[in-house]
Length: 315
Image (cartoon, rainbow, N blue to C red; front, top):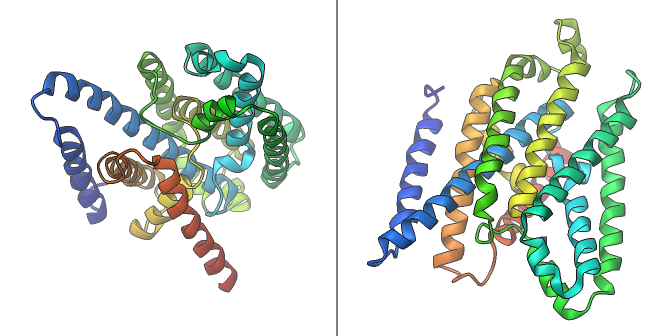
């Protein structure tokens, strides 16, 4: 794995970034500052690995490098859940959105949505992964439309509360949920590592993978469930980051000339962690918390996505 020079460089850069993030502007309050920054760094590393894993594996399954799991409507469905909670609870919403029950409800409903979507699409063996993407895209559009309608009828105070859930932020993480989320996500990653060899073959295409003995439907279904767990937990914990997966996955493909998923996912985890921790450092110390990391990442990622579309259309 470390025979790839970019991986060694990214690992060194990540360690430097973590040290800078932890010890910059600490003053004399090390006992107060360091534990809180350590929790934040741990959360960023955890979410980064989830986004990296789910993006690489999803693009392999879909045989398309400009797609991420958000196309199935997870982000839109999460925002719809938050909008409904704001509409129902009104002035008491802030306590509800920051509670453990909101996390459990959001994760549970997103997993039920994923299960229902997979059952409807895959109940017949002949159904294609592209039908799943199309149905997810349509449902995502529907969820965004309903959310927009709810937003219109909210009062300004309720809208301000909802706006805080529309963008990912590592400053509002519920530390009581971090350990529980870490256990779920680490178990999902460990279980998913069983499929790395099959995914290497799957990157050759559906027909080639089947001819080489891969149980295509089983591998796809189980990996989609792993991706659903990761995306649901990560989104409920920090909020949606739409374009991060596209950005880091495609940069990883450019840096690591390999189809080995063990190497690709590890490199993408490093690159995503560098992006997230570096972005959060800029938000806190350059922009003085006047913006959120998701706005910066979505701006850069959106431009890169347009570049990929133009590049693909010319090839």
